[in-house]
Amino acid sequence: MSTSVLYDAPGPRARRTSRIISVVGVLLVLALLAYLTYLLARPRISANGAETPGVLDASRWDILGDLALWRAIGRGWLATVQAAAVASVLAVVIGVLFSFLRTARSAWVRVPTTVVLEFFRGMPVLLMMLFILLVFSTGAFWAVVAALAIYNGALIGEALRAGIASLPRGQREAGLAIGLTPIRTRFAIEFPQAFRQMLPIILAQLVVLLKDTSLGYIVGYVELTRSGLTRLGTYYGSTYTFTLFAVVLVVYLATNLLLSWVVRVVDRRTGRRAVVAKRPGAPKDPGMFGRGGRLETDAVSGRAT
Image: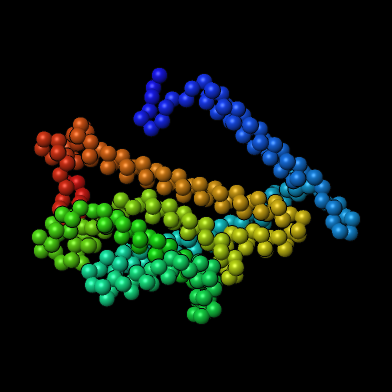
C-alpha cells in the first residue's frame, strides 16, 4: 500500500465514511437540480390571474428560430469582443508602464506611482466607467475601454513587477556590463523574461477583462448583455426574458471557456519549455542546445541560442 509523508493512508472506517459522504453529497445535488427543474417547469400565475407557461415549455423557446435574434446577439457579441480587444492592448501597455515606474530606483517616481496604482486597483470598475463618462464625456465605448484598461493595467503591472523581481540579479548586471543603459536593460532583458513568466497570469486577467465588459450595460454601451436582455427583451416581451438570459449566458460561457482553453494551452507550452530547458537529461536539440548538450542563452535577450 502506498503511503504519503503528509498524511496516513485511510483505514476501512475512514474509507466507508468518505463513501457515505460522497453518496449523500451526490443525492443532495440531484435533489437541488430536481427542485430547480420543478421551479422552472411550473406555470406562473400573475397578479391578475393570468397563467404563463413555465420557462421549460416549448412555447417559451420558439424565438430561437428567428434569425433577427441571432443577428442582434452577434452584433452584441462583436461589440463585447471589440471593447475587450482594445482594452486588452491598452491594459498591457499601461501594465508595462506601471511596472517600469513602480520598479524605478528614484523614490520620487516609485512612491507616487505606487499610490496611483493602489488607487486604481481599489477603485470599482463601474465607478471608474461612470467617472470617465461623466467627467470627460468620452462616450460609452471609450468609457468602458478606458476603465477596463486602467484597472486591468494596474493588475498586469503588478504581475510584471513580480516577474521582474523574480529574475536573477545577474540578468540586469549582464546588460549593464555590456554597455546597455538601465532603461534599455529593463526593456531588452528583464521585460521579455518577466512577460514570458507571467503570461498565464496576464492571459487569465484578460479573461476577467472580457467578462467585465458586461458592466458597460450600466453606462449605455450596447454590448452583449444590453443587446440580448434589454433591446431583445423589449422587442419580444417579458415572456421570453429567461430565454434571452439563457442565450446570453451560453454565449458568454462559450467565449470565456474558449479563452480559458487558450490560457491553459499557453500555460502548458510555457511550462513544458521551462522543464525541457532545466531538465539535466533533456534530449539534445541542435537548434536549442550547444556543445555538450548545454542550453546556451543570449545574455541580452535571454533567448536560447
